[in-house]
Image: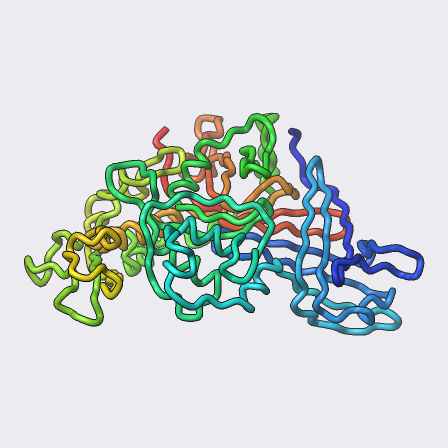
Length: 461
């Protein structure tokens, strides 16, 4: 792969109504010539992909639209090609000048519209036929009959979970039910002896993903720069991008792409992390119906016993990008003692015991055997999510459609100043990152890609 500063691209746009492509009187369906710009975004915090299409319409297309059509958009760039089918949900900023009209069509995955029209009510044992592990519920919601029929025919990439989740859905939307289950799921396989949780649900061009942050990191560590992406099986090739200021000579890296611009959002915000309890704190399980059942420490009012957590203590129990070290390991001792002062208390709600079998010892219930872990899991989930964002970069690169949210990218960044005539690598900002969100933007025949990147650890090399 050769370094590049711009990616030439082409776009084909067709409108679909009632499963038929709309054509004009000459039999032409492609309105790509009317496109001023197009952008599509996906991210690990988004349950659906979104897009925006800006049209300069001199062909009267707007007069034939109801606003509820589906749009098929195909982007071709470099050696990759992505095809999207979106549902229109809004047309805005419409204006007329002369014989042409300009407007913006806002688009979203069709499944997101279906999510707004579906509701789940009842006990999960009944709704899901006693298949109440989170990964089973996700599969049933998206491809089964629990919502009246499959919600999607896209690929699913679902990590297996170990704990059962009996609960009542109080007229929740399908995606709300998935998020509720994600917050209470435990991995079947873990890096250490302790349980791991912290699941996320998102969509990218490959399909839908239900995966723990630890599994996502493990997959990124296993990504290779060799071969090609296999989207059908959820596998992506690892790309390396290098930042080289324009006045600096490149080092001739044949396998690297150039980063056009880079910013550092919220860099080393220790105060914000302290206030959020991202380094240390307390956690407890609260029973709002009977306070005496709550898992509160009785050792002392200021106890740092079973209910406390510390990022360095939890570090070895997690997966880490490049198997790096904890971000606060090298912090001066005086500052570290302040960072690790415990002030925040995180609460999780204990489930009720209404569905335990009659006469069964509540402490030995099979469905609630992990109650003693709830305070620990609340700590782990918070630390796992917050530590993922220890290092953040926002970069812009020449368009590359072979990059995916929830997968990895390798960054090479030099130090700002040369030392003894040599340009050394900046170890803090170099290494593997998780692509937290990605946005492809097309305009004037060119494609650009912007990415928000997360890294949870610092290099030990």
